[in-house]
Length: 382
Image 1: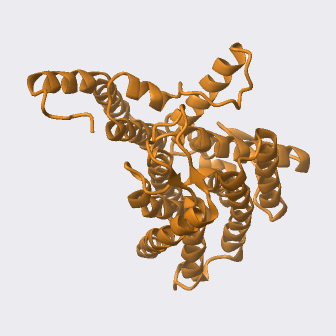
Image 2: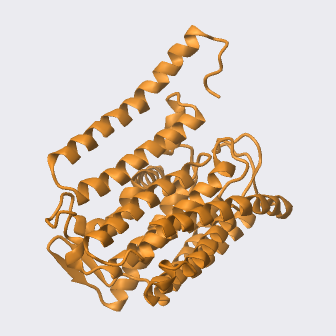
Image 3: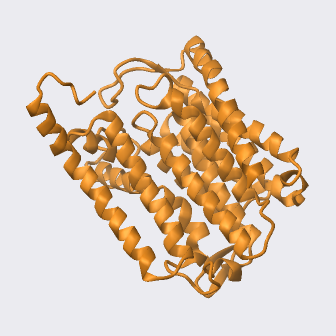
């Protein structure tokens, strides 16, 4: 665990330092987000958070290879990590080009597929799909299709939710910590080595997301851009794919007490990226339905995402982001706990957190309005 904390710290520090360089480079190259009607930022803001985050991931991987415990891990661990990083370089480059020249949706989609194929070609892919009490074996064609679909879907979900300062990076940081917890506990329970690619990737991912937040949180000095959002989406998806190759199907079907736990833990490696990013995926689905019903392209932008709705009902920018963090944490950690631990107490605790989160979403704007009415001179919306 201590070496994982070292990896986390390196990812945080390197990303934080590189972000300042990347921000200046973005300004120099003109990779700056102009103010548009559908945006919520008021000033032009540079991109290129993605290259800084990629640098943090690379640095964390290099340090991990030289640590006493992680460095002595099986060759397959760092083979998976390198494959994901190469795919990350590809998708980050696609995002950089988009940040500079605004690629059309089809070109960006093709770049995402290419990154997924690169990851598969380097050996990271589903071998089977775990199911309760059984599993489905996949041939090569099926494995490629399922793997690429998960990578592309997750990358797009994170990209869609990246609409408020610090929102995507914060949500993925929370999800990555939850995923790391799941992978680490699963290794402990099954008597496997703690040095696994999924744990290494997710703790490094959490580190780069935390490292970029001081630059990206409201009011943001830089955006992670498509290069950053697609990169972190790819890494969280590939962590899930790598985890299924680490454990046999029977190991994934048990809770920490050796019995089958609730919420089908066998499915969790496949479902966890979707559950961690439940809010972005729901937002993505609603956006596709909304735009298609209106006779528009599902990729056409609008200002009706969930985070925009939170602003409309009266939340400040910071509060909307923090509430989205709360929902992401609730779903991610709640799913992991309920899946690994059986018993009614876990469900009661999860239900209580749901009620508290819902109350915060709908009651805080009313409280802010009452405070503003009591003291009109106090700007509570800033």
